[in-house]
Image (cartoon, rainbow, N blue to C red; front, side):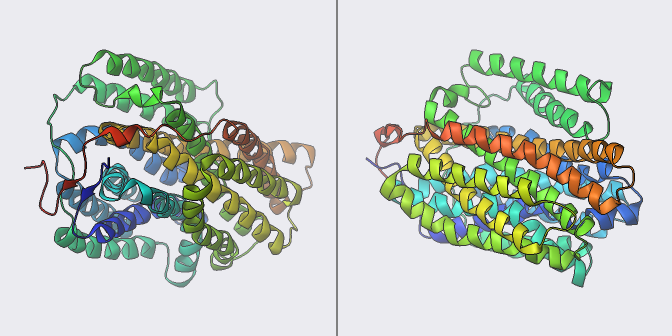
Length: 485
C-alpha cells in the first residue's frame, strides 16, 4: 500500500520547495567568504562576525521544531508562500544594512523564512512521490541540503569580487520574488490541519533549550568556558531541553512527537546527519578564511578553489540516490564515511601557509565525495523508518538537530581556530600572521577528523528499517486542496 498523495505537478512543487530551501541554506554560509570584508567595514572582530552565521543557525534551530506545530495549523500554501515572503524581506533588509546590527537583523528574518520552508519541503516530498522513487528524490533533496551551505562561499566569492557583498542579498531577494510567484501558481495543499492546542510552555522550553545551547557554544569563540556568558546559557539550554523532552512525552498531543526516536534507524540517521552537517559547516567557515587569510587568494579565486568539491556533490547526489535503491544504505554509508575520514586526513597532513592550491582542491573533492554518500542514505533511511503520521515530527526533529550541528560546527571551529592560533603564536613568537592562521586551521581539522571517525563507527550499524509506512491507507487524490481549509 502506498502513502502517496497525487498532485498535478509534483516535480514543479518539489522544484519550488527545493529552490527555496537551497537559497535559504546558501544564506547560511554565503557571508563566510565576506566575513573579512564585513569585519573591516563595520570594525568588528572574528568572534562578533561569526554571529552572522551562528545567529542564522540559532534562528533556524529555534524555529524548526515549532514548524511541526505550524504544519498542523496552517496550509501547505500558506506556509510555503509565507516562508518565501519572510525570507525575501530579510534578504532586502540585509542588502540595505548600514551597520552590523541591521545586517544581523536581516539575517535573522531571512532565517525565519528558511526555518518554515525546510521542514515543509521534507514532509511534502515524502508524500507526493511514491516510495520506490524516494531514493532519487531524497538524493536530490540531499544535494540541496549539502550543496546550499557548501556552495555559499564559492558563489559569494565571485559576487563579492565583482559586485560587493550586499549583492549576495539582492540576488537572493530576486530569486525569492520569482519563487513566490511560482508558489502562488503551483503549490497545492497536501497536509492535514488538526489545529492542536498550542502549548506555550513547550514553545518556551524549546526556544530556551536550543537557543541557550547554541548561544553558549557561539560565545566560546570570544570567551573562556568558565565565563558566565558561556556556561550559563549552556546549562540553561540543557535543563530546558530535558524539561522539553519530559513535557512532550507526558502530553497526549505533543508539539514534537519524540516517539520518532524510538525508531533506531531514524535515531542513527539523525546522528549521522548531525555529524555530517557539523563537518560541512566547520569546513565552510574555515576554508574561506584560510584561503584568503593564509594563502592570500582573492575572494573569487578562493571560491573557485572550492568549486570542484561542490561539482562532485552535484554529480554524485543523483547517482547516490539511485544506488540507494539498488544496494541499500549500509554499504554507501560505510564507504562514504571512510572517504570523509580520508579527506580530513589529507587536510590535516597538507595545511600550511605554503600549501599548493591543488592539494586543497583534492582534499575538498574527496571530502564531498564521501559526504554525499553519507548524508543521502542517512536522511532517507532515517525518514523511511517512520510511519506517515510522524513525517512532520521526524522532519522537524532531524532539521532542528541539523541546525544545532551547523551552529555548533561554526562556533567550535572559530573557538578551536582561535585557540590553535594562540598556542602556535606562543610557541613561535616570530611567526607571521599567515603561518599563525594556517596553524589554527590545521589545529581545528584535528577535531573535524575526530568527528569523521565517530561517523564511520556509526555507519557500521546502519540497516534498512521495516517498511512501517506501507501500512497506511492507499494513495489519496490531492489535485485540489486536501484536508485543509
